[in-house]
Image 1: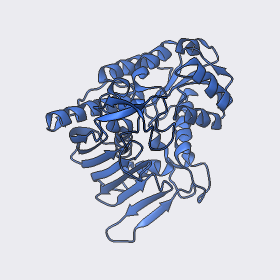
Image 2 (image 1 turned 60 degrees about the vertical axis):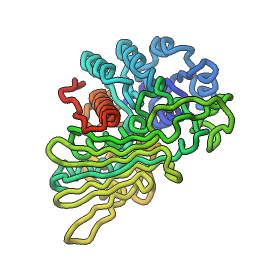
Image 3 (image 1 turned 180 degrees about the vertical axis):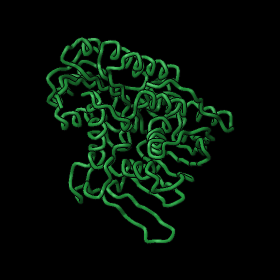
Image 4 (image 1 turned 30 degrees about the vertical axis):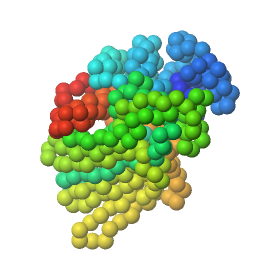
Length: 386
C-alpha cells in the first residue's frame, strides 16, 4: 500500500470520522474544507491537519490531493463529485450520492468514463465484520433461499421540536430525510447481504413535527447539547421523521423496514432478521460483535466476531482478536480499506459504488411516490452501472 494524499470536504459530525479512519489506514490527510473558511481553519487546528482550503476549487487544485472525501450537505454532493471526477480525483461520497436519480445517473456515467478512478459511497454498515460474514453465508448457500427480511433503523436525536439540523430541510437534504439518511443504510445492507434487488415498495411515512425551531445561535443537534435550543425561529418541516416500508424483492422474497429518528432511547440502532429456508440470521449495531444464527432442529448459535472463526470474506476486515470489540469507527476504516485497495489497483465488489448509490436514490424516489400516492410503486430497472 502506498500512502495517498487525501482531502476531506465537510467538518461537521461525519467529516472527522473520515479523517480518523483514513489516518488509521496510514494515509495522509493533507487538508480539510469547512462550510466557511473560519470553520475550516478551526477544524484543521483541532484535527492536526496541515491545511484548510478556502474553497472547493482550491482543494481540487492541490496536487497533493489524490482522493477526495465528501462529507458535505446532500445538496452539494452532485456538483462536488462531478468536479472531483473531472479533476482526476478518486471520490468517496457520503450518502445519499445526490438529490435526484437524474443527478446520480449522470455521476455513474461520469465515473464509468473514468475507469482509472474509484467512485464510492459511504454505506459503512456493510463493513461490520459480521455483516460481511452474513453476506458470505447467504451467498454460499448456507442460509438457503431467502424467504423474507425484516428490520429497522431507530434513533432519537430529532425527538423534540427543538431539535434541529440542516437535514430536516428539504432544500438541503432532499424530500426524504429519515428514509434517505438512515433507511438507505438498511436497504443497502440487506441488498448487499442477500444479492436481491427491491422490485417494488409500499410506504407509509410520518412527519411528527411539521414545525421545528431553528436555533438563533446556529447550534444544531449532533453538534450541540441534547434536546436542542429552547429558543429560535419556527421553521416549517415537510421531511419524514419516521415511516414503515413493505418491500418486494425480485425473485419473490419479501421485506419490511421501519425507520425512526424520534424513537426515545435508541441512539443509533440498525438491525435485521433474515429468514432462510435452512437457517436464519440476526444482527444489530448495539451488539455488533455477535451474529445470531437460528435453526429449526438444532441449537441456535451466537457467533462472536473473531477472525479465527470468520470466513475468508470477513476475516480481512476484523483487525482485533475475539473479545476485543470493534464498532462504528472501525466500520468506516474497513470500508475505506476496500476502497483504497481499489485505488491501489486491487478491485473488489465489496465497497458501495456510485451505481449502488444511484440505486438507493431510485429506491427513495419510489418510496416517496408510494407514500404520496398511497399505493405500491415499482423501482425502475436498467440503471446505469459504474
